[in-house]
Image 1 (cartoon, rainbow, N blue to C red):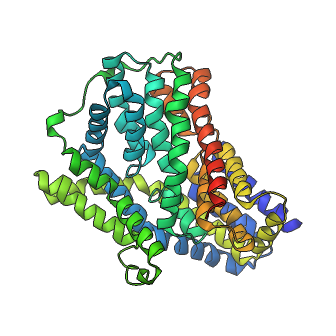
Image 2: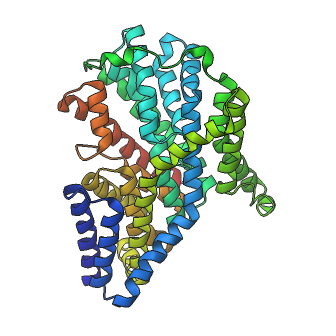
Image 3: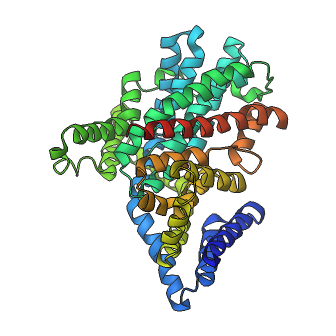
Length: 435
């Protein structure tokens, strides 16, 4: 009983430090890991080595993939490929199907771009369309932002899902395929369907968003933009499908289906197709990469800290014990993992922190219960997006960019994120009946 109480105290200390004390997450994770190790009776001389091992083990398998994902997404954004995708979809589907175009845009752009980058990149486009069409800003923009959020929380190579895949020993390709199955119906409900209820919300966006940042003729072609942005998904999805249909090919394809190789190939293709092939020099393209690596550093530090706490729980033996205790509860493991992630999300705000923290707590459930680890990643991802409120930076970004009151921000943004979390876990549970 004391061991379980010690874990709760450590997680509570982590929550207080980040949410109230505004302590940098890596430092908060290290302090919480040390506190947990002391309370669990780990020898003093062993504690630093255990934390360092946890940080190294988790980052070792993720750092290159996440950094490649960051520089790849930054190149998609900087070259105008993301904006070309949006314009092409809107032009193809026409003004009468603009909510559908915005939904697809958010999801496709969200695959390679991290949420904050995608948000800032797409906001001028949203408001430009608002001024052109006269449609309500919140109702028009919500499907796109829902697509960005769902891709961020559910789908590799985004940091939290990628870290969760490593933590619970899931398969990145299968997680991506299952994630698409869950994400699409969730997006339809939380995006265009929910947006129909938001037409009366009046936004007051800043006039600065009336202009367009770059002439359309200077953007990459639609084919180059779509092909490059979707290339990691196509490569991972194709290799996973082939190995599912022809298991004997799993070994020969192991190198080509590696996430590291997939992201490296995708980035090289993007360099030539969107950069050098359109007149940029290699140093110019690499300048974009350097900026992306600076932006991704804080996320890597969060993941590193979570690895340290996870290792303390593992080497102390509490992970196995906690897994057995959680598995004995009369609650499906996937629903339990979702609830844990939801609780952490509500307390800490950040979806990434909620996801990687929950992985250390519910990870043992995978071994004890035998639940599908790929679905566990999605269940935690759904919980990590639940009920965004005043301790989440995305909440304030949405409120200030759209010029909304707190009431309308809760009514629109918080409700959308909650619908994503609720219907996400519903579709994960339904999928668990078939896989």
